[in-house]
Length: 121
Image (cartoon, rainbow, N blue to C red; front, side, top):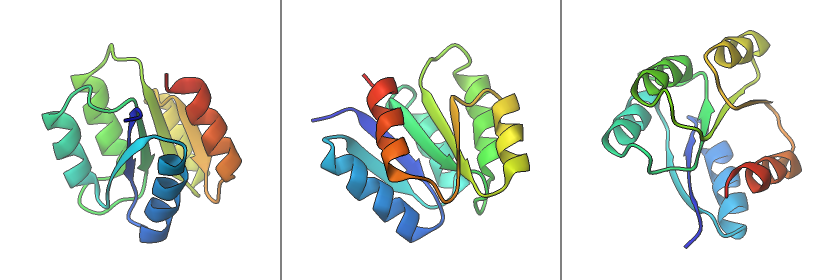
């Protein structure tokens, strides 16, 4: 089984598209649709994922709140944490919180594959 990737997005089409793309490359992919369930999974399974693709505008808990909580829990962990949004200001806020990479929506699928293949070992 490939490395584990977690996709968090409230848009079912984005989740499905990324999941299909990454599973087709041999990655094990889990998904969820809101920030609170994402945080609960990440908090209960520290270190379970090599990469997290996180939409910044989510119900129940924003992506920025999830990033802040993750940085407090796993401040020293080096992993691929990708913020996704069409909102450039939110992406800048995520960068200030230390995300690994930001993807502006809509994004190029080839860029996703390149990012994952170079950062997820």
